[in-house]
Image (tube, rainbow, N blue to C red; front, side, top):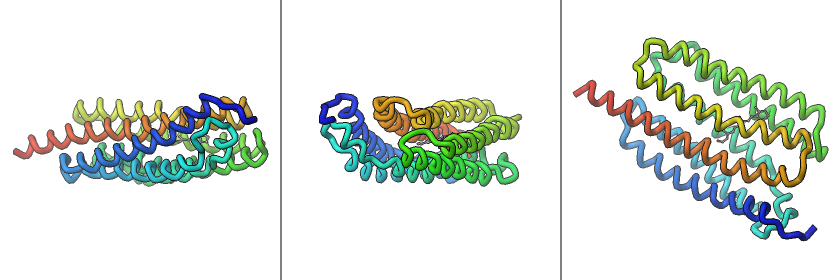
Length: 247
Ligand code: RET
């Protein structure tokens, strides 16, 4: 039981690394905010909020996982922290796309529906994960929650691709291609999360459950700081286009 494991050690350190990346991201987004027009500055504000919330959560999480290469230390980690983080950050991340799309192109409560369904997806996923953790393996509740949460995820995909796709018809070609890129980035970077849940509900090996935490740390940086950097660079270009059109 007291066996030293490199996988455990790397996973433990990945929490500290993710904390540092989120903190650096926050500083970057706050500074970039000054380079945007008022219409697009919320993009940088949203990204800074996302990385700040994550930095705070990682600051707390890193102190609960230990740094000793012992699986027993990592076992004390509460997945609940992750869900608290996702509950706050995923709606903020999703809100970036409608802001870039522009108020005039948004339709009947697109933003509100996106955010509500996203929150439902995370809350239901949390209920499932808690039931799995309590039972120490897959449960019926866990499977039902997966099903409902996946349905929410598909609804989000529908809004991102069908509705935003329609809203982009006739839009400027740069806006079309950059939003197309950002939504694809978002979808791909979010796929990791339901896969991590599957590892728990299928009750796969302990090493996979440990590795899952390291993958989540990396995925979080890609989905938050990486996505934010791409979104801010789009917002900068759109801001420059606005300035040019005005001068
Ligand atoms: C759950 C439960 C199982 C089904 C699905 C899920 C989706 C989770 C997602 C999380 C995204 C998190 C991000 C965090 C950091 O930036 C809740 C695991 C579909 C999509 C992007």
